[in-house]
Structures are given as C-alpha cells and as structure tokens.
Length: 341
View 1 (cartoon, one colour):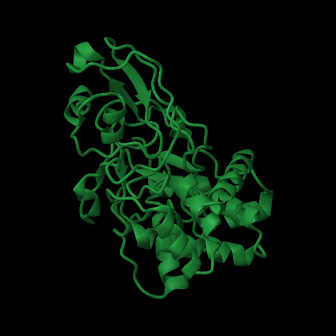
View 2 (cartoon, one colour; view 1 turned 45 degrees about the vertical axis):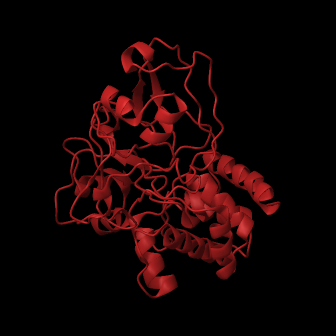
C-alpha cells in the first residue's frame, strides 16, 4: 500500500501466502486471485495454457489481475487440457523471471488506464491469502464524486486526488481503485456491488512486468543506510518482489507505493525524478521512505514497519490496529529469515 508522510497516508499490505485451488480434473472451479498472482502463473500452476485461461474468463492474455478478483479455472473438459485432480496448496514465493506478473503494456502510458477486470468478480473482502487486507481500499461506484468522498473522509479534494494520482478537475471513472485515509469513514456506496471493470489511475509509479531479486533489494537498502533484511522483509510482504502488482488500494510495484508517496519521495527525499517504470527505482523510493520512518521512530524497526502499513500519523494518534499487528509480526518473521541469506 502506499504511504505519504506528508499526507499521513498508508501503504497496502502485501501477501505472504497464496492459497492454491482445490479442483477436479473435469469440473470448472473458482479461484480468488492473491496479490502477486498473474494469469500466467495461475495457468502454469493448474496445467493450462495462458490462452485457455484467458478464454475461459473472457479476458486478454495481457490482462493485469487485481487481488480479490475471482477467476474461473476450467477443468479438462472445458479447457481441453488435463488437470491434476489432487488438492493443491502453494506457499507464496516471488514470481521468478519466467513467473512474472503479466501487465498490459498500456500501463506505462500516461494517457491510458489499466483495464484490470472485464468480468464480474466478488467483493474485495474475498481474499485467498493470510496477509492483512489493504487499509482504505475503495472502488468507485456509480454516483461517487471526489468531492463527496473527500468530504466523507474529512480531507480536501486536493489531498485525496494527490494521494491517488488523480486530476481533481476531471470526473472520476467508475471502477477506479483508490486509497482512502486510514480510519476514514467508509463511503455509503460500499454496500453496492464492486464494478466489474476496474481502472487504475494513470500515474506513476507504473506496474511493469518485472521483478527484483533479494540481492538487488539488499544492495539498494545498504546504499541508503537501511537494514537490508528489514527492507527485504517489507518488499516481500508487500509484493513478493513483484513490480507488476497493483493493490485494491491503488498501491503499485515492489514496495507498493501510492502515487502521492512516489511524488513526495522524489521531491522531498531524492530531489530528482525517478523512473516510474523501473523496479529498482520503485525499491529505491520505498527504501528511502522506510529510512524516513526509521528516523522518525528512533530506528525502531517494528514501529517503522507499522507506519509503513498503517501510516505514521495514524500510528501516533491511535496506536496499532489489529491488522497492523499482524503485518508487523509477519515482517519480524521475514526479517529473521532474510537476515540469514
């Protein structure tokens, strides 16, 4: 998820576990997409070709998947390809170079939106992993306006637009995924169905079909004076080192940065533009943001991790939320594992 200390916003939690689907070889079943999964990785795991899975779900083979979307996994009869009948449970691991997320090339074009869904899907609360859900994620429903949402969330239109990389002068498209301030009242339209077609605001950083290695994260962290094992733990927790990920709260890339955070880091901490399409620059921005949180918390890694997820201002005002405690516990465990590598 994203965070901007200037706006006191938060980042989205990323997934630790992917739950595999249990299915029979001849029957179609549903699968709720976990963060970090792609059409390619799901098809490979279930013995399908990319075209078979795309056809079964009436989407393009290059469609980017948001966490929480429900896919149809065709059986052998529907897909024309044999599937194992045994139950599957897959522990998350960052996609390898060949198991990267599939992202539409249009995601790197400022003039286009990421079409992340074209078929009906279940609500974002339906998640198939054990990680805490993103804080403040909301999908725009018919009738929503930035003015109404900002008023309901007790922030200005400019703040919520900046946080999400939106133009406050333009109408917001139905299906746009946005981040609301942590603790903000939920818009009344949350009870309405989530739009089938989801849109990611065309702002940097952009999701790209690439990933980084742990070595790259460690190197970047060390160069900026951040404990490499902590940076690696957060990068894995947030995305599994996957730069193609866009969360249900509009956070992007390896470090799951909101557009507002990305801009704030460049202006305040870097002083020069970063490449919005670069996985390494996404890591660099996230690491520098983490460094600022460490400095603000007296180098308390647990509090800094909590602030990365929940937002520093929110942590200071109300303490750690239950999901934040889960996030911090996971980061601690991962930090220990990465320290030994």
